[in-house]
Image 1 (spheres, helix red, strand yellow):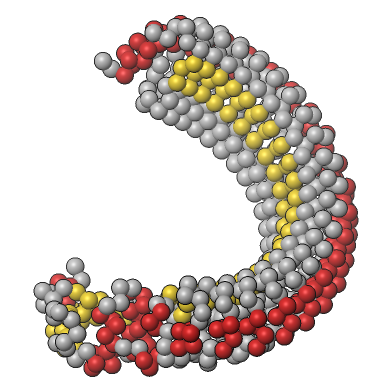
Image 2 (cartoon, rainbow, N blue to C red):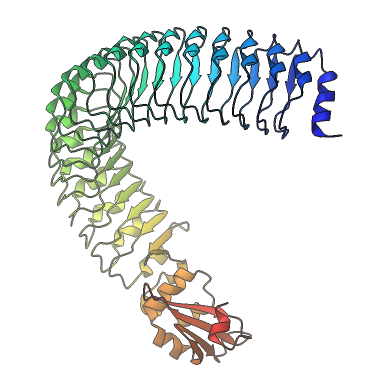
Length: 560
């Protein structure tokens, strides 16, 4: 019996059923008998291979729930409009290029999912869905919306992200029940002034568009709590921004902003502000009035200094100042008593204020890529610090007090000027990860005495096994024969030298082919003869040595 016959028989045996689930059945079509299920209230055929629906689908007058997502539907029959009891309709992940006008006859419909289809337009009849509260149209090919969209007076959620919209109809402002509007990832260059009429709107997503300015009316959205404007082309913000008194999250990253209006300080409910990737050279003093702010991202700007008022942000827990031009920090930075994360990498800092030690809640401090040669002794006061990144500076030593950071688990000292390991490292009992690459270290034996057996050390750009935690002149050539990690073998070769390895292991060249050399070791260091394949990488000039089976006698054969 074919699958279609099985489904037909199932339907005929289920005439009084209210629910029918045929999901993941690989059905290419539904039998006409589907229309005989007059008691059916729920039908699910998601995740199949439906390319069309039979007209008889319209006879399911009791149907309230219809799930057809993840199929291959390219169109819908006009009879779909006869499902007058339908409340939820799932058509996402299909291949629909259009909707029949009869869609507007679904007067009971409250939720309609059409995301990830190929819709280029919507019928005007969409506006007749007066009960609709949720409309999902993301990831389609819509270039415009019909004016009738404004007739959806019950609509609460409108999802339109990642279409090809270049403008919005003025009627969008008639959606007085709308609380969430997502227009991210379109091609909008402007917004209609009528957008201010969306008095119930709490979330507005406009990221990844081409907006160069915003209508002054947008700032009259007094219910707005979240506003996303990232990756547009905004060069300025109007003073009216200060009127968004309910706003808690404002994302303006990756625009072309060079200044903020003083009125920004009136956003007293704001908890998250992202200004990264703009062109700010300074901040207004009013930034300090954002007393509810917990997260401030200023990464990737042109800040050369910070206002003293930054210290008034007493609720701030995360501050990102990476990728700026800061040569110093104001002493008031120490007043940020709630701060847990401070990122300062890639600035021009040559020193830190002593007040940095007052950040008693700080758990992460990132100072990578500055010009620091020393740390203030007050660093010892950072008792909550778990992660400290000092990479890419000019450190040759660390203050003795650093050994008192007993909560520290991660310490990066890479790419500095350390010629020896600071003795204080042994006092960091909680340390689990230590980065040491890019220094001139010759003696790692201090690490062998570290009290934490779980310590992991990264040196020479690899995770270095514990047996290598000695003076480098104690590294042994025979380790090459048992080391399973190719990158560690590379480091071993670099530090010992291929000549010493060949000498200590009495290696003899057996054969050469291109950049490969097959070596044989007669030394009594294993139960069977040892053959090694040596290769010089043409791009990096690094030497690599790999043990190969002793049955191989030619270099060319060994690389296969």
